[in-house]
Image (cartoon, rainbow, N blue to C red; front, side, top):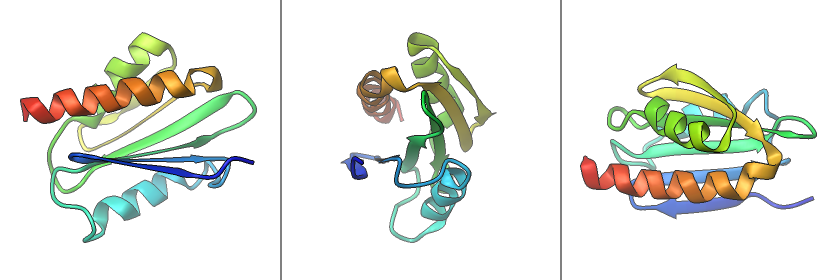
Length: 118
């Protein structure tokens, strides 16, 4: 079993829980993190976990206000395949587990590009 990975970037946090957090509660955890005083306004919180044998579930939130996480996830998932939904400040997606590293690379790049735009 692989351990969780925490990726801190400028203006974002990615938590790759792998199989350490149940997919049913990943959205709740992301919401709790986005409401905590640990992260400044505008920070994007992305949490991901294995949903079953071949899927990854992702939950994304912005702290108070800021970037459109639905659009960010939509751009990444459109390129790697999968489904996404939600709204500007709270969104999620699912994709095939084989795309895990590609998703991480793409989401980090997209979040860094988005930060420059803001």
